View: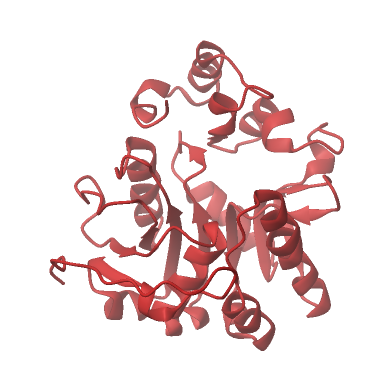
Length: 281
């Protein structure tokens, strides 16, 4: 599919659900992606409208693990897709609704993917991966969970963290999830997003009587009720989690020196952190 010359977005009113006409396929064959047995929808935003090296490495690792990658970007301009695997589908939409809005847009564009053998919903908040994703994907499948997350958290209330989720066959086609993702609304406050949608997703799973699991549960990492991705970042990597969150580089409340992170990545994975960081201020 050629890149369209222009995009016309009809923005929904403040606080309302996103309009399906907001979504435009920039690159790739969405209909072919919709027929893939394993699909990964990755939410992306960059204020400079780039697909940086960490994002392209993540998408390439997903493709190598057997997933059809679909990147939903909310960047101000059209990012150059160079560096992404040739099979990647790139979808553009307005910067509304955060990650859950992007996942809802991807699922709207790929209705048959809801019944795929495996669906991953992820975002670009991670630096890495510093190792192939095969072990992580195998861990998710072996859990037997209907919904699997890389990590869970005890912060606010016990819940799955939503930056890397894996859904078993047909789970996303259940009425509870069709309603959940179809009802995503634009909220300006990130705390409200977490409470309504990240914690809300765990509530939907429980109400539906589905089984959930975390690859690296909060209670096993020594983080207490703190966010394990920041409070136990090294423990996570030592346990086999091949990423760390960008927050560690950006947020002064949890910041870790780049040199410390680079040394940990080198010690644990034998990888060079520098090749992942050109897109991290």
